[in-house]
Image 1 (cartoon, one colour):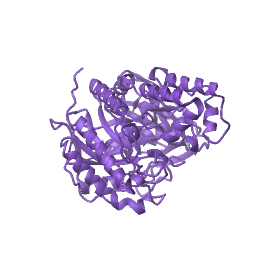
Image 2 (cartoon, one colour; image 1 turned 180 degrees about the vertical axis):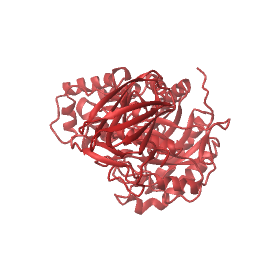
Image 3 (cartoon, helix red, strand yellow; image 1 turned 90 degrees about the vertical axis):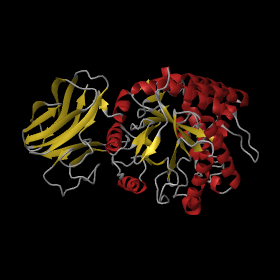
Image 4 (tube, helix red, strand yellow; image 1 turned 30 degrees about the vertical axis):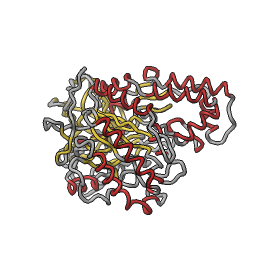
Length: 524
């Protein structure tokens, strides 16, 4: 299959291809593949970053078997089957997280390592075949850019900013990558540094003045060999502090932030500061990571981004024993013993460890993973699935909602808006909360969604009457459905099968009389 992709470039606040057509990047992050992260292995402090995980594996099964394990792990964790599936599901890009140690040795006189480049070559060839863009993410720079586990920092210090030799090594690596891929349109952008210099450790205060100069140096070096690819710049403090950015120093850059909503109960964070900064910079902006929560947040998050012309990459594509990523890797037998060892526990029997790591090599293959359709559909705001009532649209008053009192503010979830959202439960065992929306006579909420296939779906609404019987009118794709809600407790009301389009579906819930609490709408 020949690729239909062409080079992307920044055009004002849009990303466009070579014909000038706008491209909206929505993809997944390929974490844990070339840079293993301890939390995705269920490990503690003894296995919180690649070098510690490698040490742990060697301790448990010996260096020879460990070497074989890592070769096979990287071979099977992301394969052509993963890329084909990512494209089938409707994503159009991937963001592979690179560890510099997989591409070059450590020390004062590093040499390049062929395995990393071979893995990246394979990924790009698969993406070319299935028409996916690639954003190359320098997740772990030489010396480490954060001083934390996420970049494989050897000494818990941001040594990239402390030692010139590491900056030289990083520049050399980016020149090699840019030289290799300068004529490859499948590569959308170079992500120069992931999440540099956190504030909480004091790293930002000490070294943030060096960040933009380093970005300028790397960009200048890349531009000597590659003038066509976009470059994406992340702020300090986990990507999100853009105060150092005043005006673009290159005509083909875009700025990146990372967006996680970890509050409990659920709280949808604001992005106004990034939108304001975009207007000042007049460049595209993009979310390089979002995820690690639940379907309610996923739906509202990606809908919020799209409403504001912001592409995104969901993090991550898959990880072990989870229900909040598109795919979950089954946990091997006796894996808890290995995880406990990473926390200082007793060293398990070698035979148990060998079996567990061999089982992991099988379990990471896509065909052996568990697919969560509900997660994927929430990320892509489509059905079949559940639309939580609080996830009405993000285009504002008189478009996504109408309420009579616009001076009010919700106490929960969307705190800057006047639609009343109630907290119904907060289960401490869960990573999310249950909420509902209360609306009165003449008020309405508007929901938009796509569909996997455009087939008819069974529509159900879960609602309760607050002060007595309530009459609702649902307007779906120009059809009107009358709904009577009588119970004061939440009741599921079956509205039968309804026709659905693949794109551009809308449901407007209008309260004709009374006061109602709506929990969710479901189309299955």
